[in-house]
Each structure stands twice: as C-alpha cells, then as structure tokens.
Length: 178
Image (cartoon, rainbow, N blue to C red; front, top):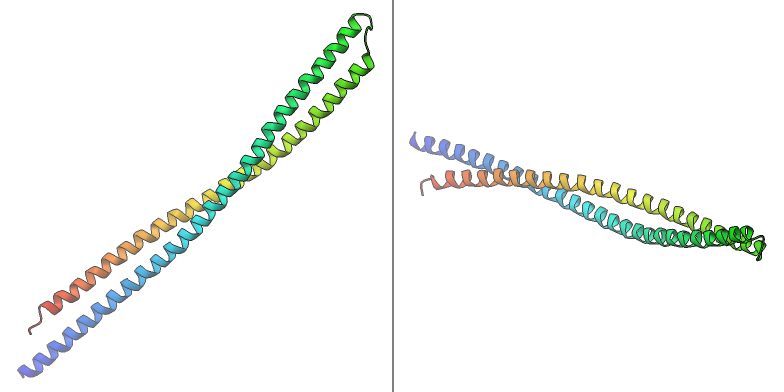
C-alpha cells in the first residue's frame, strides 16, 4: 500500500516536472522567436537608416548645386541690370554709345540668369524629392525600431516566465527526498 502510494506520488511528480519542462521550453521557444524577430527588425531598421542617410547626402549635393545656381543667377541679374542701366544712360545722354551692343549684353546676361534659375529650380526639385524620400524612410525605420523594442520587451517577459518555470522545477526537485 505504501509502495503504491509512493509510486503514485512519483508519477504525479514526474507529470508535474514534465509539465513544467514543457512550459519552460515553450517560453524559451517564444523568447527565441521574439529575439529572432527583433534581430530582423533591427537589420531592416539599420538598412532603412543607411538608405535615408545616403539620400540625405545626395540631397545635400543638389542643395549645393541649387545654391550655386542661385548665386550665379543673382550675379547674372546684377550684370543684366548694369547693362540695362548703361543703355538707359546712353538714351538719356542723347544716344551716345552703342545702345544695340548694350541691349545685346543685357539680353545675354538675362538668358544666363534664366538658365541658372532653371538649373536652380531643377536642383531644388530633386533635392526636395530626395529629402522627402529620406524622411519617409526614417519614418519606416522609426516604426521598425518601435516594433524592435516591443519584441525585446516581449522576449524579456518570456525569459522571465522561462526563469520562473525553471525555478519551479528546481523547487520541486529540491523538495524530493534523496
């Protein structure tokens, strides 16, 4: 009778330990799955951030081109205005000087200013597109980072549950007679 009771108690303890082992293993698998997802999200986040930095660098080149073209356009407009002023002074002085040459020079500088302005606008448009794309990628990277943090927290929670299950197994084993 006592032997049967001992065998029954041993079977129940084996079942309890087996159940706790299954629970611990499930928490361990879940933890590892969350770590794997976190790793994938971190890789994706890092890739998006690198691409965003690359686009921002490219946009900075277009910004420099835009600024140079704006400066050129400003200088060309100043030269055009100088020639227009010369033509006006020639007319005011009764036509002394080559008004045709003055108009030609003013027109030439005007065309250069127009061309530089167009180049500036094109560079500005491209720069703006690149910055917008970089911002979009940064937003995606931020979303990945938030998901990464969620996975890390979930993995930590699963790890705590795993440790708890292992400690319960140890507690059961520690209470067994030798």
